[in-house]
Length: 74
Image: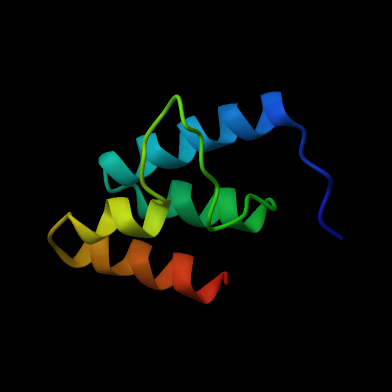
């Protein structure tokens, strides 16, 4: 069962998700998704794009793995 996330928590989780994407940290992205962070988490103070849009600008196998994880999570 996924827990309800509040605005402050969502901003922090969005920051964590974007940081993991920027560093291409596949395991961190997977852990965030597994803990209930939505794949479309968005924090306007963090970034203007959704996580999938952000990772789409990156190159390499880790970027592809992150994209697959985000798509697989919904």
